[in-house]
Length: 318
Ligand code: ATP
Ligand code: RIB
Image (cartoon, rainbow, N blue to C red; front, side, top):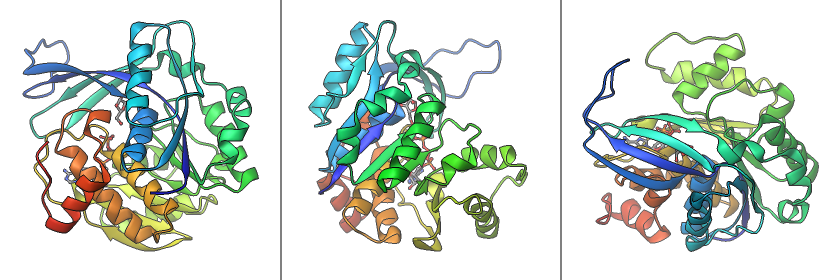
């Protein structure tokens, strides 16, 4: 993998409990197991891309707690450059995650230090941003910072991939500077609702996806990749013929960070010059390996592991 990727985003400590089912309001459930993992959408995407062999620089904020030390080390061990990751006073970001036996999850994030990543931090990192072949971000850092990044991406003509997670209202001026918007299905529904085009159907058909993509693309957004879990991903926009790329069939353990694995793989393949459909096929394979494993950053595969899945249809032992 060649080409530099810069990720501007969150870094969290994930506190993960496996549960038989999601608890009801007011209910106490006994968990099936507990573990902590390095996470955060920004950190996950950075580690995902680095494990695939990309040259990755991360911009973000950690707290001055003990987690800040271990989270930085986890990024570095995977090959992510952390010179532009600041430490601020207070706690690092964290996430409380429940995972059911079918691999589905519920997540509560506590922004902590992630809330301290300011637009001026991007101005301080102009050299790193200028050298990027692609910029990746998400919505776990302040919206002002994401908007500033989009403006920089537009000014420097560097492709920007925005994962609109967790879903939030986004200005059209922001979307106009986005090359790839990558919502999952619930984020897509939330965005359309914010835009005054609510979708009430439970299962989105390809026709529904085409219409939804059109609403987004009409804002001036360049392309959209709608992540559909076990169904795969729907692509539409200026750089791709509209298409549904199927997911791989794998034994799912934990879908946490599946979307991050997809974005990491998609970005790496696009930076390599692969056409969007081929890049999305590669990204689905990256995400498929990730869902066979527990944890966020811990689940991100190497290029070799992805190639094994693509060639044989099965994953190597994890
Ligand atoms: P998360 O928020 O859990 O990180 P997401 O909701 O953003 O993930 P999903 O649509 O669930 O994103 O998954 C992203 C990609 O991961 C899908 O497009 C698909 O390629 C792959 N994927 C997810 N779930 C499965 C599954 N059950 N089997 C195979 N691949 C999957
Ligand atoms: O996308 C998965 C991530 O969402 C987790 O690692 C958690 O930290 C939250 O940011």
